Figure 1 (tube, rainbow, N blue to C red):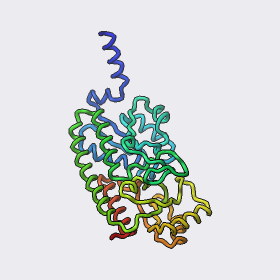
Figure 2: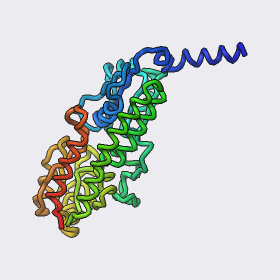
Figure 3: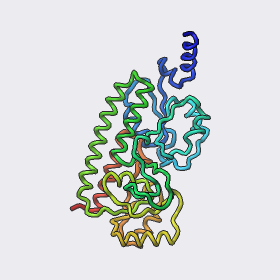
Figure 4: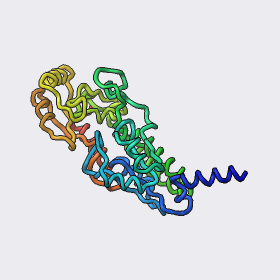
Length: 301
């Protein structure tokens, strides 16, 4: 029994949560804006919990992001790291472990049924890359799953705050469920369901509400299309009578405007909530603006 007690004591010393169990504040670090918004809503006013966002809210999706010395310090001081996962944060794994071997990393997208980056928005395999599409949060139903994953992780680490986390998560999930129902009800009446997006960030939303993404301007984020690829995209837009080309606020509109002008369709803006305000209602506010934009572009019957 003495040996067992010694082993248990050693595990507590090594555990990243031993100080939390002893009454210290729980320090939660989130990777980027949507993970911060979800976590902040679950934590709410829970005592002894701090939530910080690692990447600036103006940066956007952390594709190919490299950790800075300041990031490493934040990771070293945190107990829990809330990430999206599915490859969104390339720095997960060894870089984080080097900064803080004791930190617990939660990849919230693991609760979502994945889409392939090279497939169509309904999950069918297609050409191009075959990695998992990491943009899970741009779907209210997926957001609910990710919020529940955050709630569970927080309750595991700080069980004393479990009732607070559950209450806050229930409230937030109720709001997200209302948002999802708004999307589904409105989408039932869309006159045109064919769209072109800038890249594959809206594939999960398309799956959720029954849109067909007939083309993307950038099949690989950050890699501009060739002249031949743009001509092919224009041809596809005309053949499928796509309603519009949707740009994103995180990228210049030049390519979207060029393709739309050649195809004779309008350009509209959809926001994947990867930049912007850190206010608690930002996700819902932005997604409702997206719904209004889709309604105006696709028409209703």
